[in-house]
Length: 225
Image (cartoon, rainbow, N blue to C red):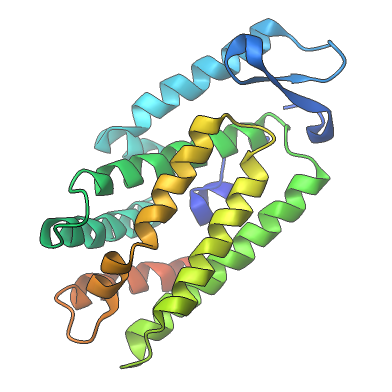
């Protein structure tokens, strides 16, 4: 299963339990004990910056993300964008920021995975993230398929479980800015007006939610969730 596929999961740095933040390089990572390579660290930072910029464009995302995940993210964006346009209390610029931050966080986690910076303890956290995302996905499907079944408190709690699990994984490895990106994503997804707009009975977004549910079911069928 690919890390790119549950939260975009794909893309592994030395033993995770030997990794530490490097203030001198703006949050880069070095193995503890002074054996790190500055060139390696700078190279990793350059990869993150380049991929982050690349992921900020629609064309870039199409190269980095498989078609099924692209469709899922596109439909999620449509739901967020429609809500932002209809609800005065929701920032109209947030949907694009949320989409970019999902991609950027996934790329950074993928780089940690590809460069072998995630150790056994982190693998346990990844399992927890997958469980949380799967539970959230199943709830979304249920609320779509069963009339009057929407439980905002349950879905919010499920999304908050995802937020906590991702924070637990990235906190030892990434900067505060990445943690802020995570919060921006989940602050929007748990916003009461967003959830009401998408899941209320007779919602104008029913058709788009149906397309998202189709994408989620495909991800579940192939083991990406």
